[in-house]
Length: 158
Image (tube, rainbow, N blue to C red; front, side, top):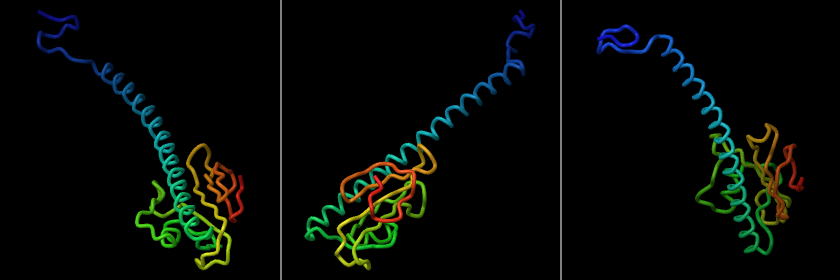
């Protein structure tokens, strides 16, 4: 008995054309899924960056309230994990989820050299989304948000 493709019984299979069509369809679907997941990963990393800076804000404010409203002064732009964690004796310091080197930055007013006389600070990090030139900023006055120009001083740009 023969099947509808004129193959002997037990020798059924797919034609080369059918296999190629299936491979093309699967490849196209995989491409869309990968592109979609990549955008999700960027958003997830940005969410973690925002969360990390808010946690640092909490640490700074707690330190400040226990030191008569002052905290260590860093008048030049610093990486959070290099100095802020030392200034506040943190044992766990979240770092940027993508970069092996810290991209979280901060600067304060005061006289510098980690002398405890600063009253204002600014924390920021570069985001991956929505655009290439977007920074998330946390200010000492409690304001937070996104800006399109990277901060250079402790003055809140929001």
